[in-house]
Image (cartoon, rainbow, N blue to C red; front, side, top):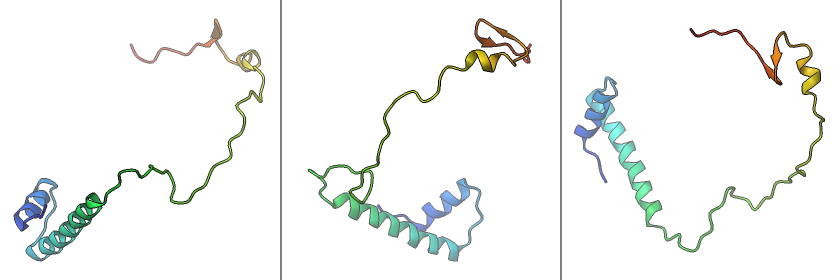
Length: 95
């Protein structure tokens, strides 16, 4: 997919960007280069290639999923101004 100078000018107009003829030609060349690169990447056969989350074969250590702190709700709610049924009560701000 190649863009024309009119496409660049239209996109600049829609984005409310002032662009002159020289800038439009430079942007056109850059955008067409990007589209060529995308076309090259789409042409690569990736069937059978496993997706990867990192370029290197690394594995992160994971810690065990266990509780490290006890329940402190009663202690923390003891200093709250208003508590009811284990919930903090706050003033109504929307009428």
